[in-house]
Length: 192
Image 1 (tube, rainbow, N blue to C red):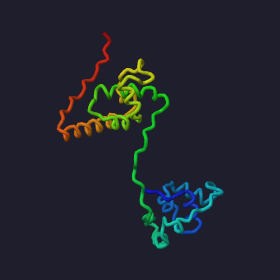
Image 2 (spheres, rainbow, N blue to C red):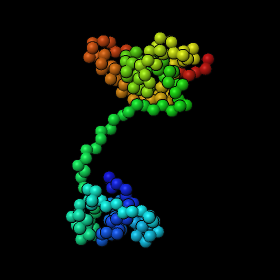
Image 3 (cartoon, rainbow, N blue to C red):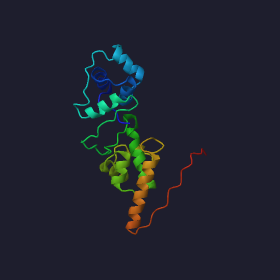
Image 4 (cartoon, helix red, strand yellow):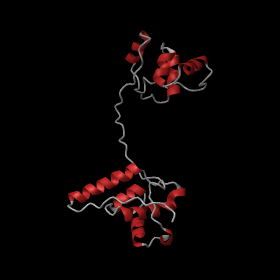
């Protein structure tokens, strides 16, 4: 359920300006009825200025009047005329502690998934095409220490993201009429 903007301030206004029950206000604001009662008693939210949901388009006056007349009814948010933003994934954040592991993950992907493009690897690993090229050419500043390690096990990407990226790359190869490489065999960590 979507809550109103500034729920406590909205509850303060509804307590002061309407004849709604504590349960109705609590349900609308996503609070517990006892918390609404504490606001009404002045024990909680002292100094919070009420936020008028009617003036700001979150409620209509007709909706408030309808619920005041019937204590069993619940307030409903008015539909917003502002379109909701589409979820767009931005750049992938890699914690500082894992940034030195990124070239190892890139080397693993280059070795085991040759069908992935540099753009796909960059998106999956949160890296740049330049870094990927340097790892591929062994001109990366830390090349002697780079050991291919599975990016899923070192926490740089999820198995689902990797699987989806490999599927997309395989589909691209099929469309281009090229052979799809077989999936790599998991390496065993047995001590000899």
